Image 1 (cartoon, rainbow, N blue to C red):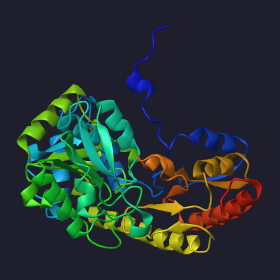
Image 2: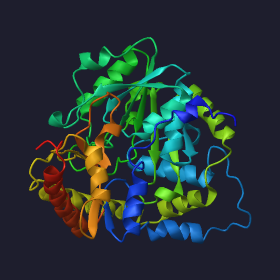
Image 3: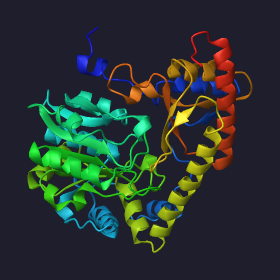
Image 4: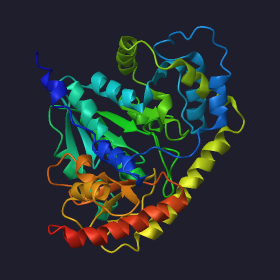
Length: 403
């Protein structure tokens, strides 16, 4: 039997999904699992979007153009214009979700063996995308104590080598909820210009800002040749399964290279693009998105209040997105998460995402976990009660737990 490639065999597993079989087994035993491990919103997908799919005048479900349907491109352009970002039609490519947009970015800016800096903790699928593209991620370590904001300039600059081709960051941040300040964005821009690097901004959560102000890299004119923005409708429209994202830049060479990547995969989903076009044409589209943001703002408050009553749990109240990194009073957060799924007594339990998988630096995150506050308020309250009970019991039964 032939061997599979080393590249695929060594691709990192998602820390968010790796323990999914244990959760499914718990459900088969009749246990209810409160999923705080994955950013899958429970808010219904807007009817205006779904109607756009149901009402699509399509006789043959054909390929869309590689760059995306003109209607979808115009929908994205209209959306960004609401944020003061004016894009020409050829400065934007519709992708199969934000994931494909990030993969395009790695493929466009790097050759195998090149490096990209990324603040850690970071969205763990960056590991998978970079691995498949042959790109080395170099972590910029941030801390909960500092709200996961960037370290001083010299700490970032010393990481830049002749192999460094770009800096990738999410703003607002997944998994941290950080919203970068103006001076932090200016720092990244200055480094990109000084060292001739690409600045790749994952702006999927731009709507979800509770403290501070979001600024897009595309609003910084000095970065015209350096900025790449990746985006997705998955969160702001609660449409994770639609797989519609965007890759945008004002650099003609970057766009030409990304279009070649798009041609290689043929086209993004057709019906879901038509749904986006219909949604953006609806007069209520802005109110719908703002309503979602306010719902998550309330959930943030409820979750923060509940967690503040759990002894030993440390956190920084997130400024944006709908994630929170917790410090837990245990030595091994993954062992605790497993225990909650396999041994915690009762008819209910909670699932978190172990924190170690969100870091590149070995040894960091072992006592942390990410929460995605994507459940209704009453479910968040109950999940926190279960977490409190679980930590108390685990510290009694697990001799290696650190109180």
